[in-house]
Image 1 (cartoon, helix red, strand yellow):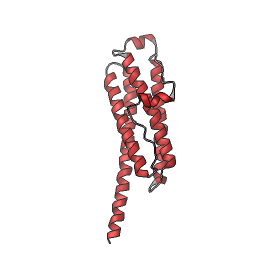
Image 2 (cartoon, helix red, strand yellow):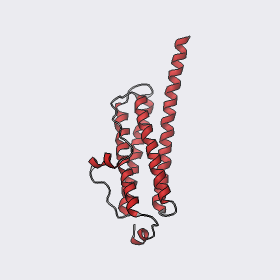
Image 3 (cartoon, rainbow, N blue to C red):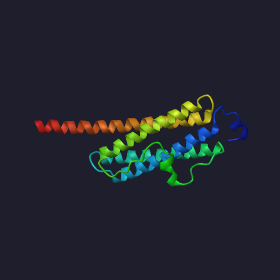
Length: 171
């Protein structure tokens, strides 16, 4: 981003860079949580859900690329050490110690809801003040809300399947 582009920003650039680095840490953790969870997952509908979780992981990685690029455009420095990610991230990384599909999905759902809040805050902070970052935040926010819906749908499908099994046992 050129000097004039940075000069016309009508916001606290240091605050924005802090928010973006926090989002970056969260994207890396989300990427790994999706990726490793998909690899370890066990249980019903695994074959349908695993490829979608890997797609979500790829999308989280894409978000990290967009955020890094924006940090650099703004003249900032992205987090350089992965050991800093948990410190900067507000969204918690949850180790998939229980590989059951519903547990993995619930962990990812909590992560998505946290990401939705993060990008809403960035979009609100930049609205009318930094159009480029605002557009990026809204684009990522849209994908995060799609991820949330996907996960909620899978959890509902699993619940319906369990209900059907319970009904069959009663017959």
